[in-house]
Image 1 (spheres, helix red, strand yellow):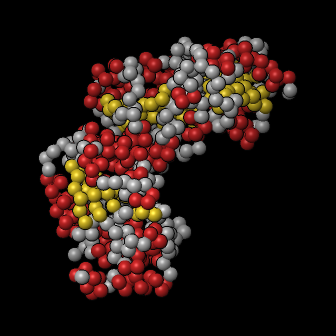
Image 2 (tube, chains in turn purple, yellow; image 1 turned 60 degrees about the horizontal axis):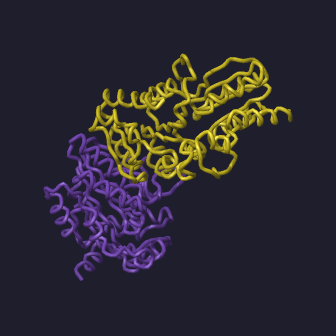
Image 3 (tube, chains in turn purple, yellow; image 1 turned 180 degrees about the vertical axis):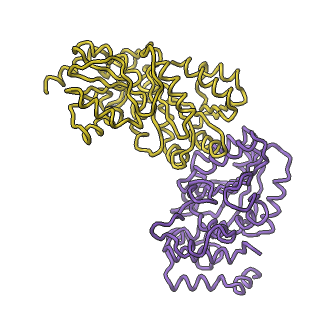
Length: 274
Length: 303
């Protein structure tokens, strides 16, 4: 089966090691969300990037882009060379989502941009009556941005029922926990107050994610939809979990080996059953 | 000029359902005709400019042609980053309208005055900057924009200053348009509201030439170079800061291709201090005819 959590995480580690890059924790928290979307919900049209009529996946929290690269690798949109030359001179895969890369829909990472672009895409599909859906993934740090709340107001006012916003609620942002930095209170209450049909879910439980997406997409209401996915930053590698150092830290050979060992299929499986 | 704007917009929207007008809750009377003629193509995005520009980008990516309207003190200044990343980086066909540019909102104070919009946008790749001086320039600017495939910022300043051009040839990107021919010592290059003033000021210097500059970016380098070669000195006039606007753009070209004396007339790195009529504010900034004449005299006395 494609989009296995440990496989995707291994690809992320491979890229992070090759590029000596950061934001591993940001990518690990959204692995299951992306896996379920790519596996079960995103209509990819003819299966190629930018296929007309496709559903849109907007990675508004651009810092998690390695997770999306890992999915694109499984789709055959990226090659081993792309993965192993990450951040090489003259290559196009950047450290944040970039719309010039086929398969990525928006340029983000400057936070609070992607959701509005996704709202425009959802509106366009409503006007044209194409039935295309737009899934927009935002971070719980990202929603400090005022533009996010402007976009939520707009989506609700214009009844963009084809928009599903997913909040990667991993509880951390760059400088600390979301509670320490800018306390969000109950995120779900806020989305509900903004007129969204909103559900909360364990963002690493693929079955639960599948069910909650299904439930929301089957609703006949005119409201836009939201899923607050409670996740763990750095999920999947024990020493990275809930450790915000992995927003910034780079892998050396030894740590890379340690992390990779935890993602070996048997080890990973044992851990899941615990 | 505002009627020309509204007429052209309605015409294009009626002819192409992909044209969508987005406004940040501004343009009360200006869009009466549009709302009546094409209500389904009118989107009031509320007082939320950042989201409005992002939404416009999403619409453009999906094949629509968004026309985004705001006051130039908010659009582009408040949303500069959205314009950069969401629109310019992907070179999306979006028309941004900044209304009330300069000190048009003379009595509302600095929050509603905009004398830095050109400077802020000039450094962004892929965007064209237009600044029409009268109704015929406005119509032509919009014609050109609707047929282009790029981001465009249209700066709409003081709009009731009358006709500049009896006839105007087809607008070509980057071209400067002669308003008054002259082979004397001085060439006046002006944009938007200042073209009228340039014509009046130029009367003091025998046989000086006056040009209107509806295209601030791109600019026809060869034509600017030829104009610089033609005159002893150039006076550039704009209702915008002397930093980063048309005066800077002309000076940049001149410094590279034909070093020239260039007198930059504009807002001199200051905010408005007082309230009053538009004419009063223009005097405060020494952009009225008498003040500009004095500045040009002083400049010429140093040559």
